[in-house]
Structure formats: C-alpha cells, structure tokens
Length: 162
Ligand SMILES: [Zn+2]
Image: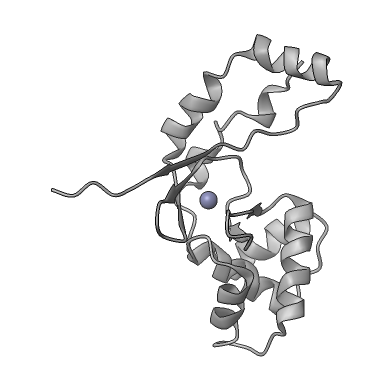
C-alpha cells in the first residue's frame, strides 16, 4: 500500500510562498528536526529559501557575502538538511546537484538548454501526483519487492514566446 503522504502535495500550498523566513521561524524548523542552530546553519537555510534551486557552490557564494563559511560546511549542512527532510536534493543531468528549500514533495520543470529548475505550482503538481494510479504503484511495489517512499517527476520544457 502506498501511503498517501508520500505523494500527496496537499501541504505544499501553504509553503508555496516560501522565501523570506525570520530567524525565529528558521530556528523552530531546525529544532523540530533535532538540528542545532548555528549561525552558519541559519544563514544557509535562509539563503536557500530565498534562492531558486542553487547548486552548493552558488549557495556558498551567496552565504559568504554575509559570513565566512567553508564550502565543506555548506555541503555538510545541506546533507544534514536533506537527511532531516527539510530541503530537497535535485540531481540534474549535468551531474551537479541543485537544492530546493521546500522539503515537501513538489514537481520541478527543467528549462531546456538552461541549467535552471522551476517549481511547478503546487496545486497543479499535486493534481498530477494525485492522479497516479494507486493500483499500478502497488503492483510496482509487489512485483519489485520494494516500498515506494516518494515520487520524483521532473518536467522539461521551454518558455513560450509571443
Ligand atoms: Zn523546488
């Protein structure tokens, strides 16, 4: 049986306006997943929330405008955030991972010819995820002997002109 919360994006709408987040709110999120709140972690999390799917290097460049943080610390912190489920790691075709400050499941669209990922509006992405046939997912689980924990769908496209 596929648990509904592994693919439901019902909670995403309330998080779609992620971006600015105060230090207190950030501390509460880190504490809620058992992470210590160092100034570096706060800065990395808040910078990621304000960014659109940066690489670790891009994030590092932005964070170091405000405070000295090593690239290794950025990588370690991103690993800890991913393990805690508060951000997403998005492998790309070029092999460079990008990171999303929204930990809840949502769909991404990759712009062709550009190394850029966009968030699909939560209500629309949610409808795609909700329309996946449960019986097929359950058959995949039983035939492959696995338990599906999440579904990652990435769209690709180009901007329409005119
Ligand atoms: Zn995203």
